[in-house]
Length: 421
Ligand SMILES: [Ca+2]
Image (cartoon, rainbow, N blue to C red):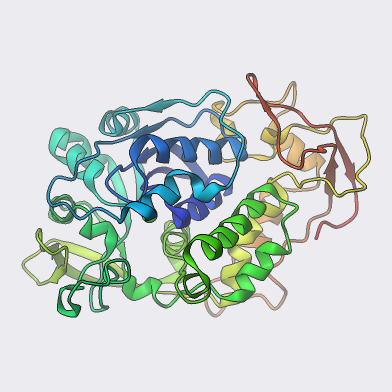
């Protein structure tokens, strides 16, 4: 189990990555901090993260947002981009019934890392982390791994895409670093064990139509229906060119790096950050950074790795003909294993998650044999698709998981022994 803190700027690819990590049975998300100097503003971004937590039934993950002002510079994202993600691209999700949102991300980091060590996934600017590093230096070593999506090492920057008036020679940074370069420099110079997922790697992973098609084919799962809606909204709000040629997996790649340590190649280099331009500077005098140079997954494996977690774990929406079932199998939370064993997640009455998973025909072993690809050289001949032995239908005419002040309501479920998907 990977105990994980996610520091995010609550943008679209963050939502994709966070849903995946929330659903993954080997990830225990301890806390989510929203960095307010990236794409989303702090409170709006945190509310959207709370909605995602509610969508997957993880109602008690603490969330906090950080300060709105970067430690240096004024390199904010364009306003229209920020407005778009603040309003979740006009996608409607049920509100979290009882969101636990704080306004002090650094304090949430302190509380969480005071209790235990953790991996941290940084998928936004580094303002929160740099503040935490400076204010609580004794706890900084509690970060076991810091997986960072950010930076451009040899690749060109991606700033000019949104700021077309920028000179070509100035386009040397990646947005997460550019938004607060001093914060990034503090983090890079701190000696924390960084695993860097720069544009050099994410440029190799554009979103192709087959991923969109695969997501669209599985819209009966609410999480994937949400992801499908993000693709639609990108096309509507930002145009066909962005939708067809401008989207990369970005933060999903970093999420995979958290999990797939045997599937990455890396190169350890001394690195720091130019605190003015946000450019990554390589040199032996700087702190060592493990630059992830490749992720050894085929495109098909990549897609299956992502989509696989949603199949057994996320309640499907009803088919139009779904029948009303009288015997409740379990509420949504029963299908989550990552946080349940520590008692934090809401428990269904009288039934432990693992027991219910077995009842439904799943086990961790079969789950992983279906989802995780084997390391190179040991790839299975069979498909990576999950072989599920049970499917569920639920009585949910609204087509979304309903919520109430008491949490996610328990839809009536019926189980059948046919193969899902
Ligand atoms: Ca991000």
